[in-house]
Length: 293
Ligand code: COA
Ligand code: MG
Image: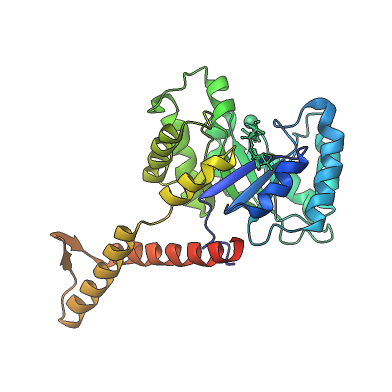
């Protein structure tokens, strides 16, 4: 699948130490998986999780789901060994925690250069520290960058802000990362919703993230998948409107006009581009869903 068209509506964290969850993920309708060696794995499980995860991923079974591996930071005792074990299997993407600067990415890109099987490996960045957020524009343009994951739990801790339903204390950080990601043309996925049994709350936060422009949401439990897939996909009404806009504009153009009107609103060239992107996204979702069903 073309990387630019790839959907990232649902991006599920799976602790690299949990064999049952690793197995279960092969059956879940997620667009992407973050196999975690960092915060979801306790210190005394780190070494075993690394071995289990490398073995599990080299055996495969995750189909078209985009696979990221979150390793521990290089400032911890596990980071270098995680990198070696995961680079050895030629991963689709390595997700680095607590990225502070573009230099952090460049250093890892250099480590990947020349490694067998890592030609296509992307680097993704956890955006979760004040320094990282302030450097987002440069980080997004660093070599091999594929996307941002918002680390909203760490960010709240670092900012010393409160969790609120409207997320107002965090909006500046979220939007700086969105701006940086869109300027560089990389993916950007929203943070997790901690109360994994609260479907209504999850839906509201997904809708907020979608309206802001995020590609999707990171998730912690399979029960969250369906909501994220639904909210971040174009709705039937979106697709219908897009089709009507494209048709109306083509008709207007045929009559020598540069503007059409649909549902009482003007449609110009740029709206047609958005409408075409909506249809392309819907097609990409259908294609991926067929592969992971
Ligand atoms: N990915 C895949 N499968 C998962 C899963 C996940 N993140 N979380 C739970 N499951 C599976 C369980 O293995 C279980 O499978 P089974 O039916 O084969 O037994 C099933 O879903 C139901 O799980 P449940 O009993 O409801 O949850 P739990 O009590 O086992 O775990 C959490 C709850 C929150 C501890 C667990 O979901 C988890 O570890 N989430 C990931 C946390 C994480 O990665 N944090 C780091 C980023 S913030
Ligand atoms: Mg974190």
